[in-house]
Length: 314
Image 1 (cartoon, helix red, strand yellow):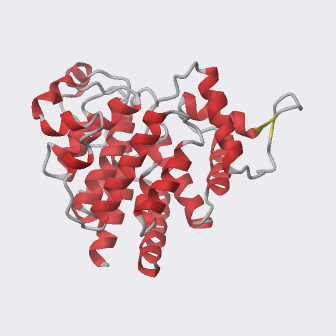
Image 2 (image 1 turned 90 degrees about the horizontal axis):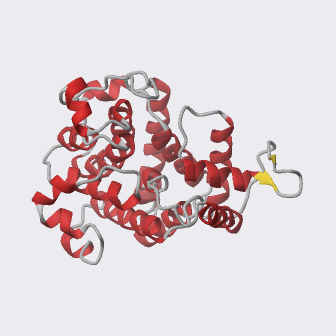
């Protein structure tokens, strides 16, 4: 169980670390990063969001919202997760993705009352969230395959001892905002990998990804040169898998991911979840951990404890 805690803490902290490292580089190209900063290896702060060093963004905030909902109601977490999403949106976060914002607003607005925002925190069921996500996909003419669901999907693979349950919850949580097969498939794969790594099971990643868009990037290192760090879920997952698979340390993986630029915070957060689970919390540089806000660290620690306890009990 000591090793399990190391892996669970590594994965959850890894998301936050990757997010904070990549946030100042979001929307910059790889060449722009090189010209302005060289190779970024520390939490420098700044960027278009003007984040402080160690400040997390929507990637971590939504991950925490999912995690808190799961802890509150493990058997049926979607209503609690949804309530957390609405409360988070009402807090006026510094950043929120377009598809996430649209779906949350569609779910939280009362039809028939000129779309008056629900402010008494009513919980909506899974069907109501799916309807909101479908409406968003229709409004966006099918373009709802962004990475906004994938970035928040680490906790089901950490909390549940059954990988089938983990994948079920991860997929349901993804469909709350993103009604897109590529998004659901990526979340399904990500959760599967996170769970396998934390279980310390031997697995063949080439076999697992064989019929997916991610197989070539794992088999062929030269494909790294063709990575596109966009917000499209398939591109983001390719970048994260490449950063994880073709490096040999936690810090190298998230630094690689962040310095790709583009959707740097999200890609580095996804990478941090994988690399953190694989290498463990003890492999994360202490200076990075201490740069995170103390309140964020306290919440992460509490959620790590909850996941470890549930895995022990199950």
